[in-house]
Image 1 (cartoon, rainbow, N blue to C red):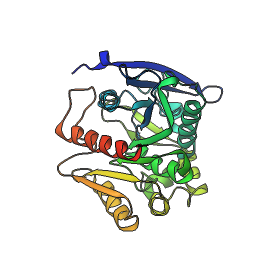
Image 2 (tube, rainbow, N blue to C red):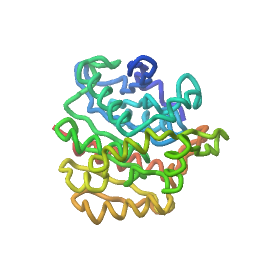
Image 3 (tube, helix red, strand yellow):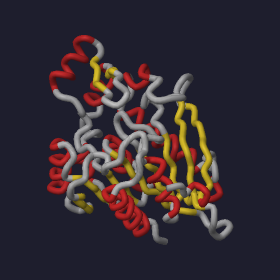
Image 4 (cartoon, rainbow, N blue to C red):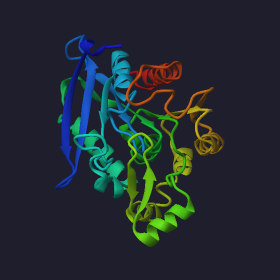
Length: 287
């Protein structure tokens, strides 16, 4: 399904240090009253994800056609530069601190009018939507910046920043590197001690469940019950300890809502996640 002709779509690059950059896209409906700014959805990818993975461009288009200005971007150290995971040296040293800094850089650029189509962006009405690790980042960023946001949505989001087991952690800290396989690209993707040191230095700040429990702005958590048991358990823990937020179980949905990379078309689960997100974001950005 091609819907790009109804949208304005421009790319951007933000420098993040001497050799790191954030590559992103802004999409907004082409038609509409002149001078009317759209509320913003910032769509965050997860671990081993990127802004052009599978369903992300499609989801961004659908959200934009629903009345939002949609910003997608690659985290500066997600491992994707010009092509698919061609910067594994940066992937190795990625941390939650770096990712949260990237979100702040993008939102600052939006507020300062440095993103494309700035005249169409309403920076007073921003919603973060994050998938997987990006869902966890959404909670952590929102907990520190409630006044900047109208709400967040977590798509199969993590509830624990440590994606790895104790044995893997011990190996990385002892040897200096550990590797996680990418089943799609067949790459062995390096993880350095920087990741675990960052977690240790920010243990309270990066406690996703506790931060969600203390967070006052609206949040919607969507969780497929066919996702990994670890993520389903985290979702249930969030429900118990942060009951002020909204929770929806997508029956039968897996971690990517049935979407694959390369993109092979939409799914019922993805469409439901998009609809729920649109309904929530529309509600919290009114007025």
